[in-house]
Image 1 (cartoon, rainbow, N blue to C red):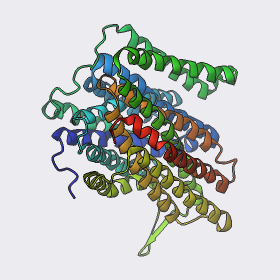
Image 2 (image 1 turned 135 degrees about the vertical axis):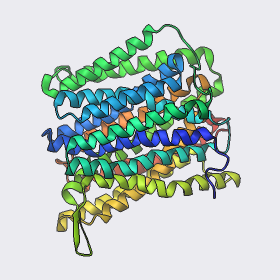
Image 3 (image 1 turned 120 degrees about the horizontal axis):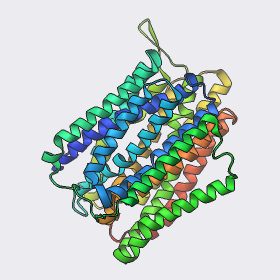
Image 4 (image 1 turned 45 degrees about the horizontal axis):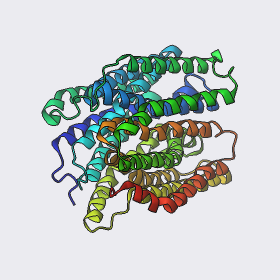
Length: 483
């Protein structure tokens, strides 16, 4: 079962570039909550909220970066700009001070906005519409993501927790630089002129300048809020959220609704509607999944027996190492899933993308059933075996393989060419909401009985899976032949 048969050569360049970018991201993520609690002396609640805002905003800026790439920069230049900003952010994180900490987060958030939606769009550009290699190609690409994610917590957590925090964050920065250098070296030869220029070029450059300025200003104000300046907290909560929703609706109308009226056919409009609906269901998945960097890391730190004894030798496993389980399982299982989708497609038995999403939500819920049992065992007899977390991460990974690469592939199939990166940014909005909701949930980890805590993602995952299965026939009709 060969998953790389006849795949475009450019895919493997993007595979390794994304591998190093994800090495840097997951290396930093493995340290972030522990660094805030242990070094910056944040409370668990504050660390959870900062983590939630970071992961949420990390996936909001791709909407901005996708729009600017589609209209002004082109995807290839946007990837370079994003890589430079993220490299600077990782190295800034290595300096142990509050201004550098929040400044680094701003650089990382903005850099990701230019990088993340555009590299996925370039992968999609390597294939023609309805190319049967596409889902397999995206699964290969997803292996690159998780190859980097597998090794980075092992390296960065070991350096950060055992040598010094700045060593761990610095290692993450080196990974980003390697990815950027590799991309600059190989893009011309392996990608040709694909996505080199904007699909729908515009010349009114005041628009992107204004948008970037507003986003950076908002990020600075958010950082000041977390440093005790009480900027947003002085605003009534209803007014804050009403304004935020109004701004997002305005952006959506400005970026999508106006062009849709004049440029899109009825079929394209319905396909875009499917993207928005899948974004809604992806929120349920990623809200629960993002507990890996917060509540599950705290469970590993506080409630898991991490003493590993072999042949008379003992070792305390760093809490951040458990975040390598998910990418390890993906690297092992992704070839099987990629080949399985291709074989099922050839025999006309492949589930539709909405059904794959529903399966993913069900598997995620099973993973949290494992955590319910682990929390109950801890309450009865103290620190529990590491195998509980291994089991939970295994089910989470099985779910992720049914949702994440499938979702990326689906967006590139459904989105009109001139809105490719913008729609990829819209898809990542699921992670914006999930980051914020997941952070709010994790912030209550110390105040809710942990058995009840893990019941929340279990119930929401199962409920979302059932609802999605019920509406799948309608979604398939709106997809107009896209599977």
